[in-house]
Each structure stands twice: as structure tokens, then as C-alpha cells.
Length: 176
Image (cartoon, rainbow, N blue to C red; front, side):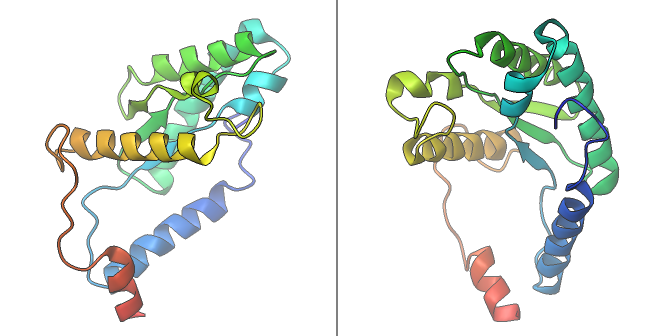
């Protein structure tokens, strides 16, 4: 994101793929019950933004601008945020990005769905100082998916998802 609402070299391609996937689902007879984005980003901003003091405000503005762009390009829906973790040597920058994510998620169109990435180093869930290990990714994905499904009323609090019928992948293979 680089704290700029206009840094969008991949935005148009992402929107095209998102809308293409929706079209493929429709062609296969599926109508999504939810449209939205799961968002986990901020490491580059936390490490490279030149003014840590201004980072929180800049990231807040950029994330809100991205949400507005997404609302016009691929949604309506929500942006489900997975809060950024931490990295030794960049704690102030990472804390500023997390504070911005928290602030944005108090507003409309954004929901915080995972907050434990900063615990990954202590749990041994880091591949290196920056990247999460598979155990961390699995934990983040499982808990975030459950939080999103519960938030949308698709899953009772704490209940595991119950598979019914063919999966989306199976239906798409049949249709294609």
C-alpha cells in the first residue's frame, strides 16, 4: 500500500480477477452470499515509511481510501482486517500500523477479524524475522475464517463449519 491511495499498479488486475471469479461462480450456478476482502498488509509501510510519527495518520488515510476504492471496484461488502504482527527493530512502525488498523476498523465497512500475529514470534511461528511459518498462517487463516463466517451469521459462535454438498472447487470443475 505504501501509504498512498494511488499506489495501485495491481489494483485493476486484482479487480478484474475478483470480478472474473464472480462470473465463473455465476456460470457454475453459485451466487455468493458475501462479497468482500480479507486484508493483511502493512509490513513495508511499518519498515520503510520515513516519518514514524506521521505513519499512523498516513496509513489510516490510505486504508480508508483503499476501502472506498474497493467499494466501487469489487464490492459492496466489508474489508476484514487481520492485524499486523511485530518485528524487532521496527516496533514503533509496526505499532503505528496496528493502531491505524484498529482505528479504521471502528468505522463502517471494516471489521477486525484476527489480532494475534504479534504473538507469533513467542510461539515459534515465524519462518524468519519477517515471514510467518505455516503454523502461524494456518492459525491466522482458520481463526479469521471462523470470525468472518460468524460475523456474517453463517456460523454459530465457535461451531465448526459443516460441509454440505459439493465444494465450490468441485462445482467449478464440473462446470468448466
